[in-house]
Length: 333
Image: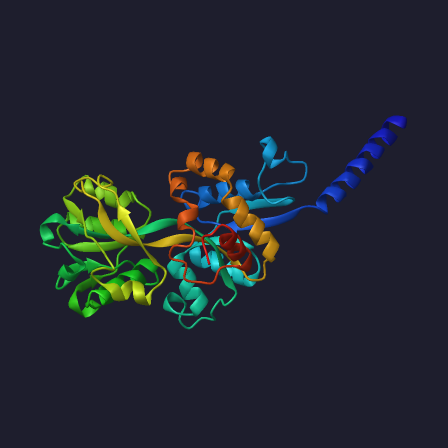
């Protein structure tokens, strides 16, 4: 009997300790994308960086430099639109989204036209660029966006972010869908058509190197076409979510030189309802030197996540907690 009493006493002590500990714990979820994509592993890195559950070693002793008492987790999700909807409904504390999708959601425009604007959407940070690729067959004579006139061009599927971005770029260069022979295919399908000689060019928005483009370039002579607000200033004047970007030479076979383009940022967003001090602590932990080491070592895109580009292409308001950090860091006046 004494044996059982000891166990019961230990269980009670453990229960009391657990309850005491639970009082100091808060949870923060990060909605990402599919497990095979980039959002999910980056989300895992950031969740580890901002977490600091009770009992963790102190930051200056080589332990966690996250928010005291915070346990963050990265959740696999369907990406930008799903994450924003979940934040709006309160079923997620934060998530990743393309900067253009975030801007449309906040303003109720673009792919959010006709839906209620997500007016409480706030930014924590821009993370890394998702580059706008304009891929042309080498024999098409296309050297500029303006050269797309009269050509067979895929703009991606209806409802995609790429399609809306492609229309914006065409407009910036003085073109519309009426000036081209538009098709609405995913990049792998457009690449197949290009191999068959039935497609002159196609748009794709995503991090480089993109698998469909790399595979195509290894089998067919293609070129990346530059996209620049120097040539079409109205694009960046009217759409603040675009940032300048460069696809390095050698990223795709047959393209030895750097190519200037635009990018939409993969951004970390949250709700205005999240506490200011919490988001301040999260932002501070994100840009801690220890987090820098984790990002550099943890994923190929991690090196692109820098404090210097944290505000690039942000077209929605910053969360007050994030804004407080960036002002203290001298990145915002």
